[in-house]
Length: 145
Image (cartoon, rainbow, N blue to C red; front, side):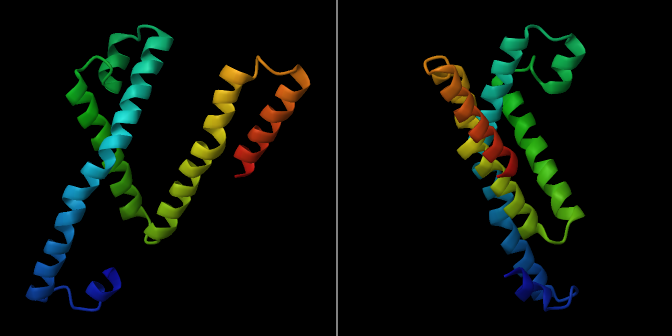
């Protein structure tokens, strides 16, 4: 659809309206779609803060760790949207960037998280040699995935 829109001159009034209408689902849809990811990142930030102990006040303000739930959620969504906008402005091959980011997160979900879960939960239950073999295989796959 974007190639279709680019075929028309930039000063065409009707195409300006089409571009504006086309942007509405993006402007309202992206924050809605990012909400689950922001909730996950918020949970990870809280766990990391609890695990690392109290951070200095300046670090807490910078990372938003001292703020309430809604403010932290908004901060995370704004950071992700800013990163997406920066990538979109910086690169004309946005589809390639999205594909690379998707494959990166897919690798994390399919290989890195199972490695962490195995190491923390099941690694202690298996024989040392088997545990080392499974950890090495998952780490190697995650590195080259």
